[in-house]
Figure 1 (cartoon, helix red, strand yellow):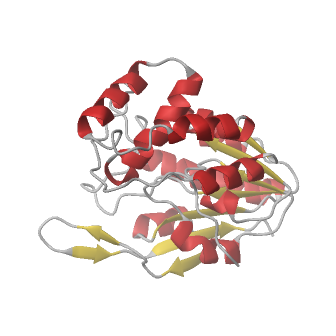
Figure 2: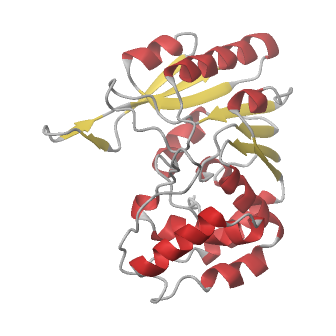
Length: 272
């Protein structure tokens, strides 16, 4: 079956793990994702309803615009995918415009432009809440027209909400299935590169998420699947779950000592 790509580039996106996630994701009526990110799991599953949340308000704003006004959005956003717009000076001017803008529509258009032209498709903000990823220097950034239309079509059965994971988990009712893709736990004390948003995800929050997942499965019989790095800490947090190890698809750079292969875990709190 053809896999559908997200229209955003996203650090830690789940496209490479889709087969494993699909294999372990229980069936249900509504899929709830507290960390929707680029939406690869949403785009490649067949639930009748979706509740898709993220703490990043720019991301959720963009998704609501694409859901409701895709034709208009494609026309407007495509104007920023020209050879002139693929210059550092142009990029930094648009980044400044984005950081100063309070207009939801304009921010959505600029967010896609920045995502496709910035370094590695990262989404990172400084402590003042300003997008601060540098220019990416790509030969010809791709304009994801087909992916935008597919996302919009799929979105008609989805609700997008900007809120914290605990609030999203509290929305789960019978018939729901929850998939959590939190910013991954650091591999060491110095490797805490998970600050994709101004609120980076702490070890206490990682543990809290695991506790909420276990409680939801145990008390409400609502299954929760979580993906993360396979480390002694994550195994401790998810000890009440069924653990499925996924062999590393990617390697993490380690200063001075080459690259480190890291396995991943899928932890299923099944609610059985």
